[in-house]
Length: 225
Image (cartoon, rainbow, N blue to C red; front, side, top):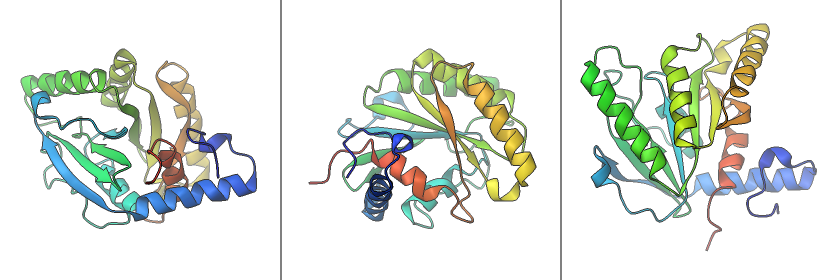
């Protein structure tokens, strides 16, 4: 079994890789329960577990990815109106890791004051949550990177919170275009001090990258009792 805190991507031994994948499978096969939705910072639940937050533009596939990771169809629910959900949703994963679904950004219909309030709340959450281990920043592999995505990267730099880019909907992109997208994002990561120097390719439809992402996140969980 890999040592606690070992990065999955640093593993080279086949047995260790298999053990890490099994750790991820077992963690995400455990119970996962919605415990709270916070619309204001004063409503945040006490921090009892390491936290992994998921961020991304509205319609990037955030809810689908969380559901794919946990093997549930409707744990995280997408709003019928993009950008409508404006709260931080907390999910207790097997009493070992807290998954935090951040509200989607880039909502076009919202008033400027609403967008500014959103950014202020997110920045305060990112800076004021010492147990926040990483933000998974989701980008849609099918489309160009938007200004809202670049703004979010800058926000994470300012908050000094490590973030990992996760490309979603990769099943809908042809290999040559996918290679170009990877190169583009890796180059972008180099310009952001808070960015991890790698990215994850995923598809909630085909399961691409889900097992590996489970293993990576399992490294942040507290040991099983």
